[in-house]
Every structure is written in structure tokens, then in C-alpha cells.
Length: 287
Length: 330
Image (cartoon, rainbow over all chains, first blue to last red; front, top):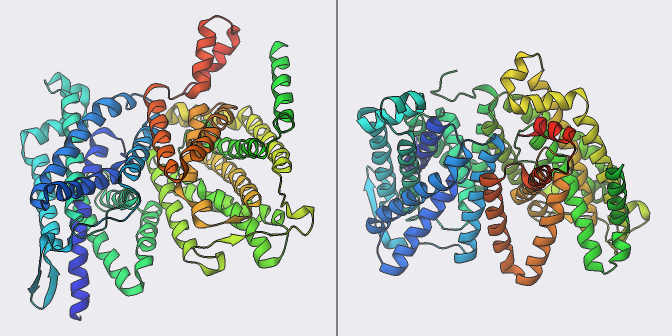
């Protein structure tokens, strides 16, 4: 295998780690509340713009931008939960889908109105340099973003499976009434889930912004990537999302390298539809 | 009797509208309202009656538009010839998407339809036969009346009105047939409907296919009026969104809901685009987003449901309407 193919695969894995990070937020919310956040991609888009604003106001890089983006989006997540999600969860299916879909439009076109349709980028040297590892040349920004995303996704998995907070959230997901009888507030747990999910998107957005263009409609593509990742990994499964995210990153990079950049989305979307046909429960999901 | 009288008055007004308001802007506006009312009514069959929220209806819209323009651009035929081809293609695509996804929960269906819409848009944008990013054009100078290329919006108005009446007639017929009762039962509780022997998957699939075919006709009419189609105007996800919001705002699952929604939102968009210019497009969709969030949060039944409830509260509605409303409630 030539070096360039290995390089493409490593690049795909680093991108895939970011896909895994923001998709695990979607899968968490789906698993707990049986609701799909159609505005998920636009949350990531907002994270990117927070990173951009932090850079243009303070001149600071992702060291400040990423935590701020995570914090800002987590706050937004809590507001969205109490203002919208808690109410529409009681409503019919149409209201659930329309609610988050309308939110997506609202966020996307507010960004469009405020920042314009131009492609913005952070300066390339904001995370400077390239590493040379065993003959592979890897940009420092991608290595940092991928590495942090991988660590945070793993941390999220540990949080959900090894801590008491995670057990409480799982209890609410399993049976909210029973959890309430055990003294757990479903409302608080679900708000925390939304904060974590939205915070993850904010962090992912700030990380991806270090090497990706920023545009209001970027959320549309990222939302579909998250849907593909989550349905591939199985709804509600963070390890599944991690595996699927890495896989999709690699598939995307390889198809861009082998058959051309315009076809990479076509390959990923076709994969998604193929999965819906043959294995709707995902790679690690149960029937 | 009184209801019949009101209906005739409204119908007469709709027929007389382009003659009463004869400026080109208002005639064009009227035609656009009817066009979107056709598309939203078609969406309503699967989104409202069956409760399966499709966000990919633009695929069928685009099928119709591309078939109509393709018939002219590649074969020199009247765009009308493309309509049946577009309908057949749309119904086939609906079957291919519907068979796997309609078995799953509603969220899955919505996600799959978005992915299909984006996939089709990307493929068409990269296909030279379909004009790639530039799109296909219709006849610049009409050869005869069958090219359906008019300068005035007046002929389009009556053409669209005819198609809208047919669409609403079909919807009414479907809603009052066995299939309509199955669909409402499935929407309220699929498990209960299945246990009583309603063929849920099959009925939802039929509704999806019927809706797809009618949406394709709307797309073909749209392309004929504008004389061209490109990936953005024929396959952009925002078309799906507009159709869906109109139906939901007016009242999804009600016969006239989509028409009311179109009559509110189309003028709103045209006027805000005229007033605000290019920048207005962004603001219009901010408004769309806000409206849709507010409907979902406070009035998932749409405006018509709200009006009906207010009427009932004032005690003006006969008792039988209350009963029928209850069975329609989401």
C-alpha cells in the first residue's frame, strides 16, 4: 500500500473522530427520548461560528474557542430543551419532526442573515505546522481536532456507563416513571442530556472550523452525516457511533481520493439508504 | 344549506380573482398560490392523513419538472408529454423509498427522505444529460398552445385551479374511502390499527405513491410556468420545506389546510422578497423557521383546527362537526 493511501486513511480517521463526536450527541438524545434532532447539523454550524467570532474578537485559537463553543451550545441545548422539546415530546409525531426542523431553519437562516452566505475560514496557521510521522504528513490542526474528538467521545462513553449520572440517565431512558419513583428527576436528566449533546456539537464545530470552511448551509450536510453515522452505529449507542463515524470518515476520504471529491457525498448517502434497506437496526444495534 | 352557499361564494371569488385583480403581479401571485396549494395538498395525503412526515417531496417535484423540460429539450415534444413520464418515475421512486422505510418509525422515514432528496440533487447536478448545474430549458417561443408557454399568468391560473380541484377531489375521495379510514387509524395508533386488521404498511405505501404522483404534476406545472428547471429550483430541499410548512400551517390532515397555508405563506414570501430584495430570502426563511417552531409548540393542528375550535366554543357549529373533528384530531 502506497504511503498516499495510508495518508488518506489516517486523514479519514481523524475526520471520522469528529463525526463520531457530534453524532454521539444525536444518538444520546435519540436513545433517551426517542426524538431526532433535525437541527443537529446546525448546532455544529453554530459551534463553527462561535469559534470564528472568538477568533475575530479576541484573536484567540481553539484553546479558547473550543471550550466557549461547547459552553455556548450546551446553554442553547438547555434552552431548546425547556422551551421546545419538553412540550413537543407530548405532542404528535408531526409536531416532533416539525419542531426541530423549524429550529434548523431558524438557526441556519439567522446565521445566513447575520454572517452572510460567504465562505469564512480561520487563518490556516491558527494551529500551525505539519507533523511528519513515519513518512506521513499530517496537519497539526487535523491531528489536534481528531485527537480531542476521540478522547471526548470515549470520555462520554465512560460518563454514560461508569458514573452515577450515567446510570441515572440510563434509568430515565429505560423507564421514566420508574426512575421518578427512585427519586430521579427525568426533566433534569433530559436537560443534562441535551446540554451534553449540544455541547458535543459545539466542541466538534469549533474543532472542525480549524481546517474547514464555515458557511450557514454546512449544517445540512453535517446533519445527514450524523444521521448516517447514527443509523449505521445503531440508535442510542455511543460506541456504535464512534465506530461508524470512523468508518464513514475513511469511506468518505477514500472515495474522494479514488473517484473524485464531488462523489464522496453520493457514496455516503447511498450507503445510508442501502443500510436502511438491509440492516435498519445498524451495525451494533439489536433487532 | 348555509354551508353550501358559503362554498359557492368562495368558489365564485376564486374563479373571478384574476379578473377582479388584473395586474400582472397579482395574477402571478394567484397562480403561485394555487401551484403551491397543489403541491401542499399532495404532501398532505402522506404527511397529514397518514402522519408520515416526508421531507423529500422535492424529489417528486423535480421528477415532474425535469420530465416536462426533458420532453422538450431532448425530444422536441410538448412539455405535457413529460407529465405521465414524471408521474410514473415518481411513483416508482416512492415505492423504492417507501418499502423499507415505512416499516420503521416515523423519524426514520423523515431522515431517509432527506437523504434521498440530497442524493438525487447531487446526482442530477453531476449528470450532463439533465443539464448538470445549469438545468434544462423549455420552449422560449411557443410553437403552439400545447407548449403551454404563455406570457400572461392568466392561463396558468385556470390551469392550476383545474388541477387543484382534481387534487382536492382525489384527496376527498381517498379520505372518505376505506383507505382514508385506515390511514387515520394508523396515524392515531399504528399498533391498534394493525391489531384490528388494517394493512398498515401497504396503506401507507399507497398513500405515499399517490402523493408522489400528484407532487410530480405540480413540479411539471411549475417548470412550464417558469420555462426552465435547475437543481436549485427543482430539487433544492427548501421546496420540500415550503410545501411541508404550508400544509402544517393550514392544518395537516384537513382537506383545505394546505390551501389555507399556501394562501398565507406564498404572498408573505413574495412580498418580503419584493420589499427586502436579495437579503430578504434569508429573513423570509428565518420567519418560516419561527412559524414552524411556533405551530409545533402551540398548535400542531394548524390554523384551521384552531378556527374550528374557536367556532365550536362559540357554539355555532352543529354537534356532528365536533364528533368528526374529534376523529380527525392528531
